[in-house]
Amino acid sequence: MSIVADATGRVLRSRLAAALTAPHGVDRYLELIDPMLAAHEVRARVVEITPETPGVATLTLQPTSTWRGHQAGQHVLVGADLPASAKRTTRAFSISSAASAPGERFTLTIRAHEEGQLSKFLVHEARPGQLLHLSQAQGDFVLTESPATPTNHRLLLITGGSGITPAMSMLRTLLRDGYDGHVGRKVTFLHFARSAEDQIFADELAAIADADNGVDVHLHHGDSLFSEFLLRRLVPDFRTTDTWLCGPPGLVELVTDAFGDSPRLRMEFFKPATARVGRGSDAVEGEVSFARSGVTTTNNGASLLEQAEAAGLKPDFGCRMGICFSCTARKTSGTVRNVLTGEESAAPDEDIRICVTTPAGDCHIDL
Image (cartoon, rainbow, N blue to C red; front, side):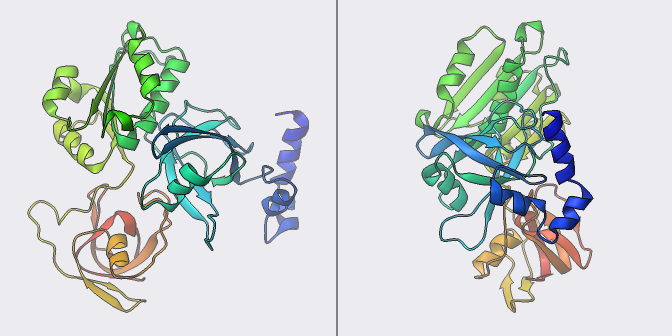
C-alpha cells in the first residue's frame, strides 16, 4: 500500500469520518463511487469460476483492500443479495486456496446443495463480476505447521466430501511454501468421496501423489468407508499424530470413536452433527414452546432450528453450523445441549444458537 493510500485509509477509518457519515457510515458512501472501495467492510468481486465436478465450482475472488488475509483451514462468511430475495443470504464456506496475504486473491470451492439457495446461486448462476459481501477469515481449524516451523511430526489430514476444501488449503500452503516431506514431516492425506466422478481436485491430487514430495494421498470412493483398521494400516501411531478432520457427521463420528480422547485430533464440521436422541441411553422427552409464535411441539431430539422449521416457523439462520450467530435466540427456560461441544446448560434467559442446540426435555424459546 502506498503512503498516500495508507494515509487516505486512516482518514476514512477515523472518528471524524465516522461522525460526518453517521448514521450510515463511510462505507455506504464509498460504495456509491465504487463497490470495491471500503474502509471497514470486506467485499469481493468474482473474477473467475472454474467447474470442478457436476455441482461443484471454484470461485476466484478479488477482495477489497480491507481483507486481512487467511490462514490455511479457515472459513469465511459470504453474503449475497439473491434475485427475488428481500434480504441478504449468508453462509460459511471454507477457503480452498493456500493462505493469503491482505488484499490477496483467494478461492472458494463450493458444492451446490439442494437445500442451499446461496450455494446453488454461486455455483450455477453467479458470473465474473458478481459482488459478494464477506467477513474476515474465521476459525481455529488452522494449520500450525509450516516449512518455517520444522518438526519431525507426521501430519494426517482426513476428509470426506466437501470437507476436502480446508485440507486442500493446508496442503497447498505447505507445498507452495517449500514443504519437503523428506526432512521428516511426512503428510498422509486420506479422503472419502461418493464416486470417482465426485472427486474434487482429482488431477491436482494425482499430480501430488505422483510427485516425490513425501505426501501420501489415499482416495476412497463409493462403498469404501473409514475404519480404524484402515487408519492403523496407514498411520500405525495415529492417536499421537497431529490430525485435521473435516467431513460429514458419519465420518466424523467414526474417526472420533477411533481417536478416543486423543488431544491430537482437530476437527471441523461443515454441517453440524445431527442432533442425537439424548445422550447415551437418554430418551427424548418433553415439549418445545416457541413463546412468541404461540406454537408448542413435541421434542423430537432435533436441533431447535430444525424443530422450529418443522413447526412452520421461519427463524433467521445463516451458516447452520454454529459459526455466524445469525440464529441466536433467547431461551427463557429449560435445559439445552450444544451438539458441537456436548455442553449442557439450564440457565434461564440465555442466548443460544438454535442451529447447534437441542433441547433436553421441556424448553421455552423466544421465537
